[in-house]
Image (cartoon, rainbow, N blue to C red; front, side, top):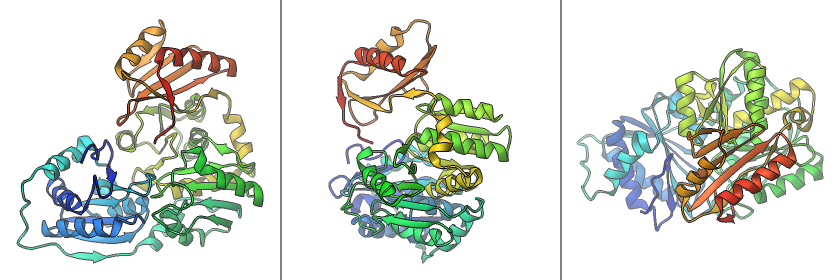
Length: 449
């Protein structure tokens, strides 16, 4: 059971770290911790999904709680179900973009509020790990099955202005979006070339993680081959999207955040827009230029969702391809991100590379990973290395000095530090990258997300 209860979800290798017995205990614990009377359950396409679902649902029902089973869906559909059906909680059986041997649970409370380690997962872990048997209720709950994809798509289309026809290539990586998207795409005037839409939890083509550039190559090649206007890649459970422009080049997610921020601030001047602290300076610049309030956040969906609710933020974006919308219960929704990008391109009558070009005004390293023996001492060395710098410990260490900044975050799960650095010129970026790498020491790691 080592380390499967994480900051934002529960995730492990099936069946060695997470099996039906543990799923059952997690179900019982969730009813108790959340005090729930109605829980929505959904799952992705992983091969261990059906048996974990059965164990989870049986335990929830035995605890006297009703289950609304919405079947195989993406995570954003589960959020929609919890909020629109006024359920007490939702449990999505998914391991997101992890390899096929993984599975897990994402949890949310009333109104699709996130449940993180601090707000419930720790208590669920304590109960699930204990040997104490759970009490069963004298009046067990009922299971009702409910399909709501059609009304979910109607909800999404009601939030975004319709777009002109585009030529799109969409790669769902054999993940859940292959089943969910066709119903939405049927309502769009665009022509779509689908890649790997067959839902297959063994991921025969590539892992459904668009953050790894290797998983984007098929999409990039197909965009160039068919002369598409845009390429879109979704992760396994459909809460993240990454974009490829008409030249087949990857569009950085922070530039997409800046682009959409402009659109939302035109709708609501003065609104707050949130971005994760690895994002380019251009995001803050654009929010200010359009009269909005920029707010930096820690990395991770539960932190961003909490900040959004506290500040009533209209929109948020993360470097990992999570885009969050107040209109969608402050949750991350990749389908909405796609619809909004199409709406912006329609309105501006320009290609994606054209609308992003003015936003590429700084020079970033992208995320670089280093294996180190002692994360704490590396961070302490960094703090002392740049006298006169502005230092923040919001998430790892952020150092800002003149025309460059960097953020170095420790991984929660590995002996790894993650570096993001940006400067006003390419030569300064290279100079400071070498300097920061020298202070960190350690050896370059291959990225794990």
